Image (cartoon, rainbow, N blue to C red):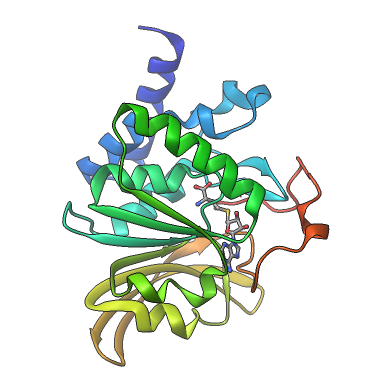
Length: 232
Ligand code: SAH
């Protein structure tokens, strides 16, 4: 068994111990090569349970957070999923292994382009169901709504954007980190009717902020060291 295979298996065992029981989620994480989403000098740490910098002050989430969010979505292969915050593209690939189609939006163009390159590379092999958009995810993707599931991978201030709640199908689930009173909590919204939601707080988290509009060029300066971590 090569070193990477061993590292992947060790990570899967760790995730099981941490309470990840959905075998579809564990299988997807086992399949997606996390090292291709992170800078080469960090490849050694690709299967550690830590968040890592991906440039532009952003991070690829800690595998446990990717796993717990994916598990909380209760996904199946008929679901159409919207992801806000493509970042490295890693979470989108994990989703794509489980659901029918992933629509993913990123406000930083260089990050999106890098993720698209990786999707094309994986396309050649077996992944064909990711559609990307450079835009402000706080507005959602009205042309493609409604979505069975929505996952937001940056922290909303106070409450999730109304556009996202509107674009969730009735019966659908949204998982979103929400920042309030100096802390962040991962929250699940189940849409029960046009304007009614069952809301549950899952765990404390630490994400980069969900920001409005497209990233400005001043934000585009390459910053390999993130200011914030992205995980627990
Ligand atoms: N899901 C990513 C992690 C993303 S980090 C992964 O698997 O690597 C959060 C991302 O959300 C950052 O790339 C940030 O630029 C993006 N983001 C923040 N606000 C956004 C918005 N309004 N619309 C789209 N993307 C946004």
